[in-house]
Amino acid sequence: MNGLVTSATEKIHGVPRIPLAEKIDRSVEWITEHFREELDQFGLWVEARINGLTDLLLTPTPLLMVLILAALAWLLKDWKLAAGTVVGMVIVIGLAQWENAMATAALVISATLVALLIGIPIGVLAARSDRFSSMVKPVMDFMQTMPSMVWLVPVVLFFGGGVHAGLVATVIFALAPGVRFTELGIRQVDAEVVEAAHAFGATPRQILREVQLPLAMPTVMAGVNQVIMLSLSMAVIAGMVGGGGLGGEVVGAIAGLEVGLGFEAGMAVVVLAIYLDRITASAGDRRPGRGRLQGLRRRLTKNQQQPVAA
Image 1 (cartoon, rainbow, N blue to C red):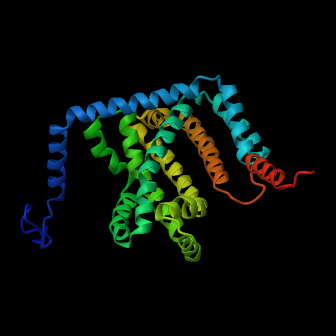
Image 2: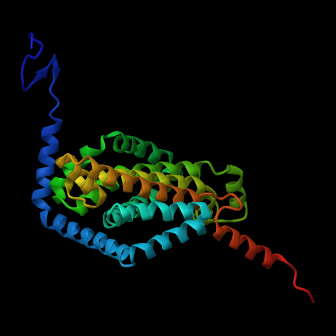
Image 3: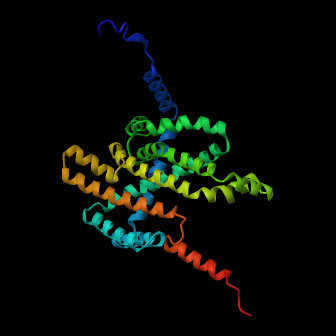
């Protein structure tokens, strides 16, 4: 080492050795030793819920489920997305990846719901307190910039392999956008609107629920979209720890050097990602004329405003 390393345990290139790995290892060992039963019970509970959602998605026949997904796309956006949904999902069926795609969708939906249940309240608190926001931002930076596969290591030690381990790793990786976009959306609400609500005697809770969150909804939905996309990308990586679904197929293709199988699973991931992206983007689009549900709501409102003839 040319004399640069004075001691393998004390200094490296003249800098004292930071025993971060040792401290983290001891912390993980302590947690697994004292909370093994609780972690196992939590893992079984999570796995049962995800498997139940997977079974629910697989209950209709594949073609019937395709029609349901296409109807949702038509209601939220237009017939073009509905037609694209039919074509894409039929391709997934033809590639024999339908069951795996539904398993991945169940994992993504579950992880997204958990991430939003945690992230949105944290984002609201961060928007209302500058001190809390300054505390949360470094944590979110750390969670977002840490390589995704690093989260698999402690998760496997805590929960072992399986779909529940994939869920926990996915939630950790996908949590940050839900917090950031919620805070951003609320902070961007016009201060004059908030002051007007104060002037009319609204409580802080009423202002949040009836003014800030509705006006911030497009930004919040953009965060939901990002959470879903990150969840999907992490759900594929979670196949390395037994997460199953399309991620398991990709990992199996890598292990067996099966290029064709890898492309089939990858194509299914692409179709699922495009569908989820377009659906969430349409749900957050507040422009007039977007989606059949908004058009129906607009016509009902117009009919209610018309005067009744005597």
